[in-house]
Amino acid sequence: TVPTAVEAAVVMICLWKKFGVVEAMTVLATIAGYSAFTIWVTRWRSEIRKDMNALENKASGRVSDSLLNYETVKYFTNEKHEGDVYEETLRRYQDMALTNQRSLSVLNFGQTAIFSVGLLVVMGSTVGKVVRGV
Image (cartoon, rainbow, N blue to C red):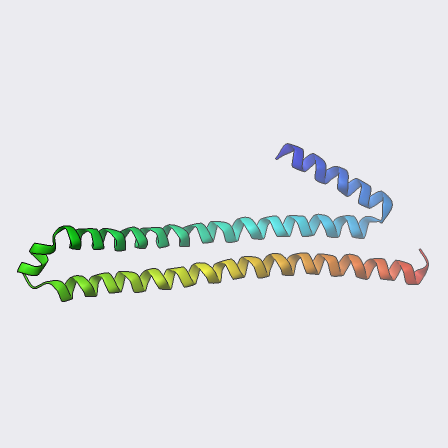
């Protein structure tokens, strides 16, 4: 992280000298906001993914147990119960998979929005300078 911080500092100094303080601070705020948002959402998504993996493992284990103990399940006429439990586990997995996809969409939208706002501010500042003849 130290090389990244040094590189960001050099870029901010170059932007400040070449374009001005507004542009440099806007780029710095955009980088900080983008990074903070990405870290926050990625941590949230990691929890979702862990839950999703646990449900997938549970479903796989249920199928394996049912197949390995086929005679026992058949003897106690427990096929419907085993099927219902497996179906419920799959439904929960599918719900979690959809939640995971939604969280990815939130991440992508947020990153794009942060970048676009930063770009808009820099472009607006630059247009203002052009109009003023600076």
